[in-house]
Length: 421
Image 1: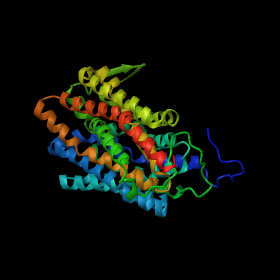
Image 2: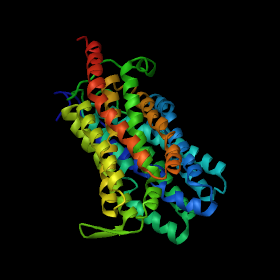
Image 3: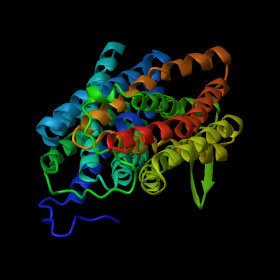
Image 4: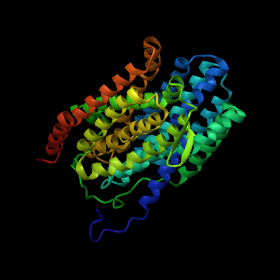
């Protein structure tokens, strides 16, 4: 445990309150990504556009959510978190209201782009703010913040499904869009950036004393190694996020009841609920672990577990029980990338420009999203999901090896050079 140096003034702002506000804001934008899979089949049933065409909207959302984060991060570093999150909340609400009325693919794509900009503004701001407020616990703070995004849709999966079935997917888009956007808008007024003396300087993991600007960061090979690893890890998880409902439908198990620990739910509903919880829990858990055993060591463990989980899902996923268990394992081993990579970036390149730098690294998620529509194409051409599973598992295994073989020695060398070692 670390604390402020002896004699240092007590911070005027409670940093745990700042963390809490960030987590709630993240929870409010979670459905834009993790609830999307529930709308794919109903939209296709109404308009017959085809899954691949509809999933382009998902890719557009992720691209705009991620690739604009560096710009939003720059605005946060310069003007503070409040105005960026405020406008993010407005755009998030507008996007889902547009989805409710979208009667053409271009309108669906435009709504996805607007939602991506709004969600990215909220996501990048809250993660960047957590990295600034908690230099001593970056893994845990980034993990708790990212957990809001991972778990935020867990409690709303069943209500959204119920509204879709009883009132149509359009009503679900409308009600949740307005509600989620309004909460983000209101909470934005409480967000603040730390001032000198507000945060401790003690750290448990290897950190650089140098404050890198984004233009300096991208000139280091370490950044591009992290970027490539991020892309490989994000691709498999995004595929599972966007395609889980179609996979369950193709496996013919979506509505088959599954009983675990006395609770019985349809396989898809059970999987979605458990996955959201585990996808959230893993972020602070592995973030906390990385604060103690190191970022790269934690990456190796988690990424390897993900590869094993995906392979097992490809072989056993057509059994409803194992579909629920193994998708939970996959999401538990995937979600931690959203705590490990930002905290590693903050350790390597400093706190001053953390929002911009972490945002630039986060664009790797957008790059990975370009692969999601191809999963539908590969499945249609091969007649099964096995090829997609094998490719995803392979990328995870390679990323695990890279963590120890490349990233760890390269980052150690860079930090020693920056610290005069």
